[in-house]
Length: 265
Length: 225
Image (cartoon, rainbow over all chains, first blue to last red; front, side, top):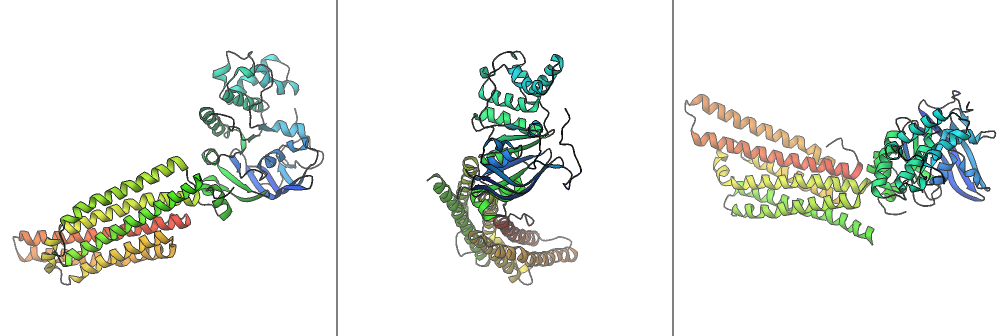
């Protein structure tokens, strides 16, 4: 597979995964993101937090153009990734999504075996050799901290796994394509505290290899796992973006202070 | 309702810390008064009252731990709780120092003769008390400028402390040189005064700590801590 997203020496700082510039977003006439600009660093965990309806999930969906499934959706601005503006015409969105994987709020395994869930994407991207596929599955399940728990039942239905295991299976499914970035949209909101802790541990391990962008309603989760935090407020405005400890200890913006301390939102 | 209760708990924590600070300042003021007039009150009252200060301290600590564990505070709330947690420790230490001073006030008063200008000791006491009162007020009103003033005032307290210490040590050395056998009451008298000076200087240092934590609470800057 040859990706069109090869580093082309754009005006991006070294170590930047995404450079988002003046991004606004609309569903029909309704504006949900307003002039958002930020650089998301490589191999760090960036959390996007904010009240319901602030556009944080929409922002995540811009990063792999998943918003296109909504007919009236329209993004304005630039999002640079590996030397290209992914909002530009001619972007190969299939290739983009291979390099920018997504994990959703609720575990959504395919109605297939554990093995087939992970092997599915590599296979449709042309990997045919059984040994190679097995190695990919084993590596992805290992990276998702699931191998030890499922390697004796790879042929069983994915639905037989617990909720937490299913979510890690979905992460393994994303990792199978060796993406550069993992987007996570409230990945633990449907899980109990034990399963949540496992996913959070996994996220912190993944950043050694991948760039992680996580949307979460859970302030403590953002504080625990992320290196940087971007706070979006109603109207789709990003009002502060900084090191996470700064956001949660001494934010600059009064609105962020009020939001993180629960005075509104 | 839950958030309103939380906000009330934060207000309650700050009020409890201010009240404890006011009590400790009052004890320090009375202890300094005892140095001047040892018969003004029974020093044993300080021992009984110290238990009350300890209870206040444990109450504030409990409030802070509950807020940390149950509310997972962030930003300004986090800084208020963290500052109060540390400040209550400084206040408790000031109360202990006041107890020390009160307990040896009788002996100290008799030994003021070893200081050429006994008023220096009371000046240091006044300075420490003023710094403590101002630091607690700065915390109560979230006044970072007043807190900074307390930090700067410590230079004057330190200077007084070193001048008086130097005078007492010189007296001790001169007495040693003049006489082969240093009278026991002279030695213990001077050492007692040195301890009193150290206690007052430490009280001023705790006021500085309270001011530094107040600045952190107000601004997030911990450079003075």
